[in-house]
Amino acid sequence: MKFQNTFCSQCGGEFGPGDHGYSHCKNHQRFANHLGYSDVNPFEVVKIISDKTLEVREMNAERDESVNLEFHVGGFSAHCSNQRDQKWHITSDETAPTIRIRWGKQGWKDAHGRRFNLSHKPTKFYDYNF
Image (cartoon, rainbow, N blue to C red; front, side):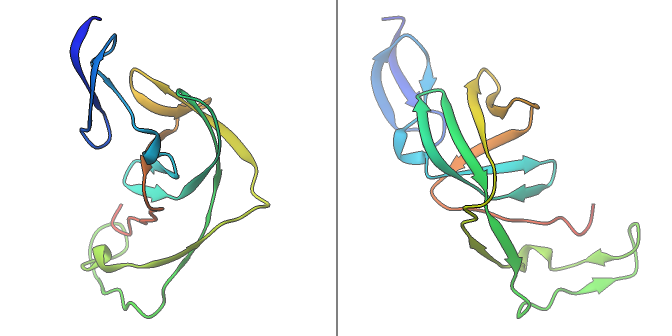
C-alpha cells in the first residue's frame, strides 16, 4: 500500500492503508449540492454507479416566505443584510432529468465541469448580493 492511512475527503473519517491519500465514505452519498460560485442548488443521488460515478437529479426548492429578508440601497441594485437567514422548502422532483457526476482530482463534477459537494442534507442558497 502506498499510504499508511487514508481519509474521507468529506468528513475526515479514517479508512486505514490504501493506494490513495483520501477517498470518500458511501454514507455521504445521499445528496449532491451543486456549487455555482456563491449559489448552492440541491441535487439528490438517485443511483450509485460506482465509487467514482453517481447519478443525480435536481430537487425543487421554494423560498420560505416567512423569513423577511432585509434589502438596503447599495451593490448592483440592493444589498441583503440578512441573506444567511433565508430558508427553503426542498422536495424531490422525480420528473427532473438525471445527470452523472464523477469523482476526480478536483472533486465531484458533471460533464460540463459544474462542481458538486456530497452531503447528508440538501442545501439551497441564493446570493442576493452577487
